[in-house]
Amino acid sequence: MPDSPSSSLLEGLKAGNQSAWVRLVDQFYPVVYHWCRKSGIRADDARDLCQEVFLNVSSALSGFQQRDNKGAFFSWLKTITNRRIVDFRRHRIIRPPDATGGSTALKILKLFPVDALSSIGPGQADSVAMELIRLGRIEFEEKTWNAFWKAVVEEQAVEDVASELKISVNSVYLARSRVTRRLRDLSIGLIPGMHGGAEA
Image (cartoon, rainbow, N blue to C red; front, side, top):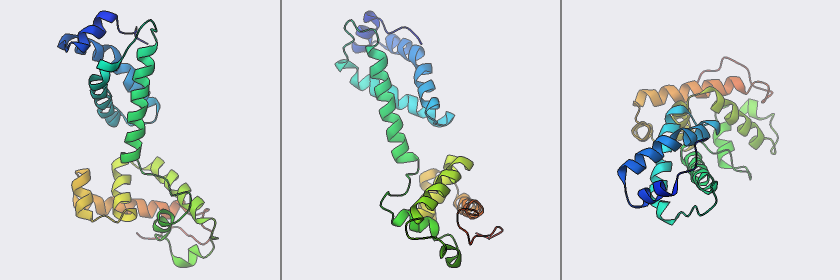
């Protein structure tokens, strides 16, 4: 861990000194990046998240007081980073099914044949859907999974998904097909009536 910022550095930052800001970023960027990566954020997203963290630091720095507590800055920086990680996951990472059951589980399970789903009891739909989501998220890159999720679960138009994720329409169709096919494979063992080899 780098040393806590000196009082003179903090004063320079609050005064808008550009060289002080460069020093702060050089000193603490690796720390923030490490926290992001340790939380499971992908490398490219972690770099973007670091920028958001330091933007927050810049806007909130005037209210920060280190006083005699040398660890105060680290705690403050960690709090900001954790909030950005939570926000990132809320907006960029797919949420699990609602605890009460309902639409998310139904939209995942509608990918499977009706006769296979007849073996699932009313109380099992959520747990099966959540496990499929967990397994799917492990296997696919974030953009592929999000394309599938937005097109299938959120029922967004394929063109809108492509525009939002900055990928081609064909990539959305491919993501939807690949993930659906893989979820069907993963469902073997979770859904007794499922068999491999189903087409998306």
